[in-house]
View (cartoon, rainbow, N blue to C red):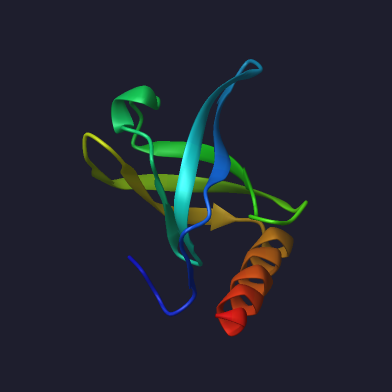
Length: 104
């Protein structure tokens, strides 16, 4: 799942949006333009295959809301692939990753 545009090493908060003003907090560590890795066991998250997630870009005030699909579960982390991100938020994510990668 890791692509050329990968940001690793900075933890950031991820929220699974359940509806009815309910949410589950998780922690992300690896972010790509294709998905992310949560340092959260899948059993903590809702049992659905698809999740609505919201996360802030590390060291930024920008928030991204994405529909994601769980592609791998383990006792310590959950890998998800983005299925839908609104175009304006997709641009912010791509711009952030491009700027972050060029700094490394």
